[in-house]
Image (cartoon, rainbow, N blue to C red):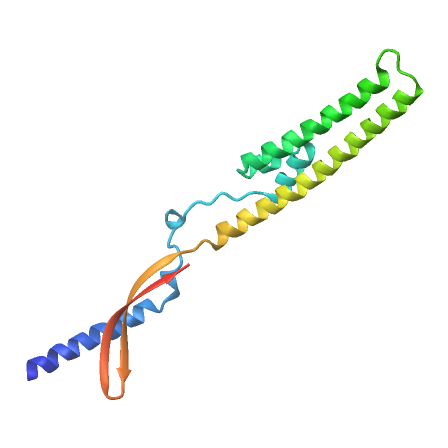
Length: 165
């Protein structure tokens, strides 16, 4: 009987000590720079400026290549519309009506291009912010911790598996 009590006392001492060690906050913090996972952070200002100067470049900077190609194609379409407006206005044998029509097409393409540049810039900033937020909040951990539970007069020991994400 004495040996059983001694074993129980040692087990309860071990569980209480190990429980106290799991409550420290140092467990969650990286101890040095080698424990951290490198995450690529995108600068929203750089993405916005790149995308305003050349629509689609900010999306490509944020590793959204397909989205960037779509903005580049839309801007290419605007350039084609503006070019056709100039061609209509200065074509051989052009009269006053074709000059007006070419100017309207040119201005329409210009304003559409400016709209696409602004939209692309706003979109690139949103993408950079979204990716940065995801990178900062992607913390997952799996912990196995011992616990000690007292129910009425009985003392129970066990292990808890905890998943956080």
